[in-house]
Image (tube, rainbow, N blue to C red; front, side, top):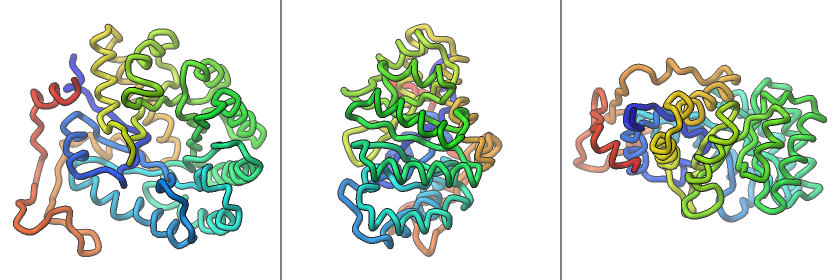
Length: 313
């Protein structure tokens, strides 16, 4: 089996900052569904209204845009750890979160957790854990890039303090330093594959060989920075090349994400098992993904298997 014969889920990707070309390439590479966590813009938001519009766009326009390329779009909603340090604004965001977390297509509260591990981050992380527990949604945790091991362990300990079950928590941005602690505590261990840094796909192969596939998830976290929206199928291709069985690749690049976020009741495999069919004549609030004179794709998407093979190498 090759990666071109498989389906993939990217359970952490910021498509708001990606292009329609990315959607096209992702679908051709076998990605059938994505989860877009709420995150920051690269610079601080200054008004609660910007959060309202951002959350609304994840639930509306971005979901529509993905559908125009045969991809099912889901999201997680939350106050990210970096912006939790603006307490006046954070208080306002906490007031509006309940208006969004139970909307159609929301599969979790996230991404939340710690950045610099400040008192403010701890406060709003705890409040959002309580919200997730109240509404019965999974939690998607952002682990800090600095002092990662301590921050990861603290994230899990606080979740357990708040009686959030480990099977309802996806701990993201793991690496070799944190994976054992995450798995031993019963949490889902997600890994972000960045090009040329952090957790590369070569390292991911070795982690799967060492730890197996139970509760391990691969994602791209592709955003407005240097990142790769094809990281999941590329990692799958390398795993197959290095002798990891296809059923194991399927688990870490598809099934585990579905099992973890499917606990929301919002994400079902039946949503995409039929042949991908689109109608680019459609509009969202009178907006189209096409520009003047472009020919809309209507019907099933034609997938070039040879092209897919080339994409994921």
